[in-house]
Length: 72
View (spheres, rainbow, N blue to C red):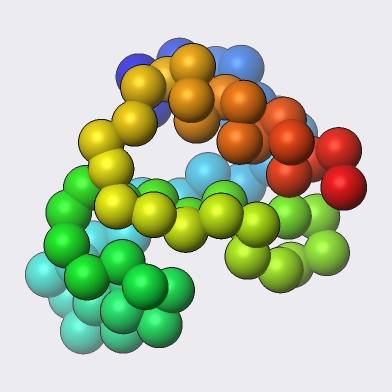
């Protein structure tokens, strides 16, 4: 699923994997309400959190969230 999203949106937005085992990754995750894996955060073009949730989510669900956030 991740590879498909990168192929579809990789040249339009930044997609980052956060390592929750690192101190920085854990701090980022917790600060966005993601206390467990899997989880994800969609940040809109203004740099604001559009959606943050624990997963898992399907590629279709993530695609919809990305497109909604990009339209803001």
